[in-house]
Image 1 (spheres, rainbow, N blue to C red):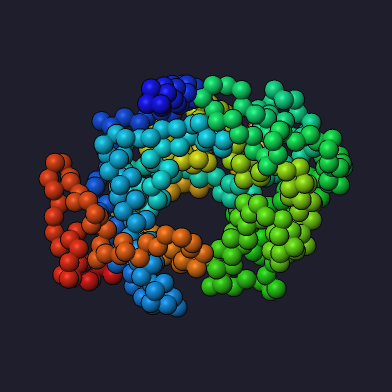
Image 2: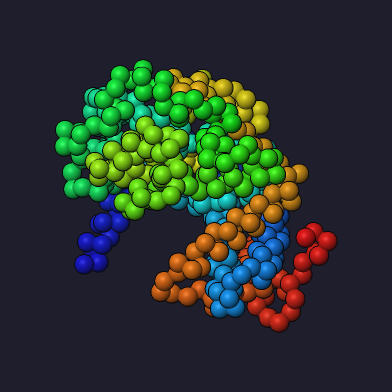
Length: 426
C-alpha cells in the first residue's frame, strides 16, 4: 500500500509538470530572486485590516454566538493570506494546471488584490491588467451560432471545450453534469441560436454594451426604476454583479424561477434563452466559461505578448495579467487586440498600479471584503465551528519570522493584553 501511494504521488508530480510544460512562458517568471514580498509591511496591513473587520462584526446585527463564529472565520481567512505571502516569499509557488477549469493556479491566485502592493518584481511594483466584467464578456462567445458548429479541433469552440481532455496531466473531467459530453442534437437549439448570427448580434442587448464601462453598470441602469443618482450607483452596480454571478454560477434549476432571472430575461431575452439552453444540455456553465477564459489567456493572449515582448514580466491570476510599469501599456494594447480578434467584441481593460502609496487607501476595501464574505457564510455554516479561532490579531497559532528573526510582540500573542495598534490609522 505504501509503495502504491508513493507511485501515485510520483505519477501525480509528473503529470503536474507535464501540464505546466506548455506554460513555460509564464512559469519562468516565478523566480524567488526576482519576485519578492515585504512581509513586515504586509503583516501590519493585515493586522490593521483585522481590527477593522472586528469593528464591523461588533457593529453588525449578528448574535453574540454568530459574532464569535465570525471573528474565528475572519482570523483564519487573514492567517491564510499571511501564509500565502510567506509561501510566495519562500518560493513555494504551488503551480498547477491540472484542474478541470484549465486555469494556471499558484499561491499568487490565493492572495487578495489589496495585498499585491507588497509584492515586487526586480524591485518594481506590479500593475494588474483586468478584463472588465470578464465572465459576461466571455459569455458573448456563447451567443454566436458558430461557437456551437465549430470543429472539435477548434479549442475555443463548444465541442472542444466540453470534450474530455486527452493530453497528459489534465484532470479527466468534462465541464458537464452528464457522464459524457452533451450532444447538440439531443436538445432543441435556442430560438436565438437558430437565427442567423448577424441577426443575433444586432438584436441582443449584450452586444450593445460599452465594455469600457462594463456589463454590471449597464445591467444596473436597465433594471433601475429611475435614472441612477451618483450616490446610489455603486450599490446598484454591486447588486447587479451579485445577481449576474448568481445566474452564471448557481447550478440549481431554481435560478430560472428566481426574481433575478426574471429581471435579466426582461432586458436580456436572448441571453436568458442561451442560459436555459446550456442548462438543458447539462453543461457546467462556470467551468465552461473558466475553460474558455483559460484557453484565451494562456494559449493566445500571453503567448502573443511573449512573442512580441519577450522581456515583459507576466504573472497571471485567471483573467488578469500582472506586469511591471514599464511594460503595462504595451501589454494592455496587445491584450485588447488579441481579445478583440478572438472574441469579436472590443474588451474593456482596467490597469491598477499597486504602489505603496495606495496601501492605506485600500485598507477599508480589504476589510470590507473579508467582513462581507464572512457575514454571508455565517448563517449558511454547517458542521465544524470556527469560533475557537478568534484571537486579538492574526498569526497567533504560528509565530512569524522575517529574515530569520522571530516577530514576537503583544499583537501576535494570545493573551489579555490589548493589541498594539495605532489608533490614529483607523
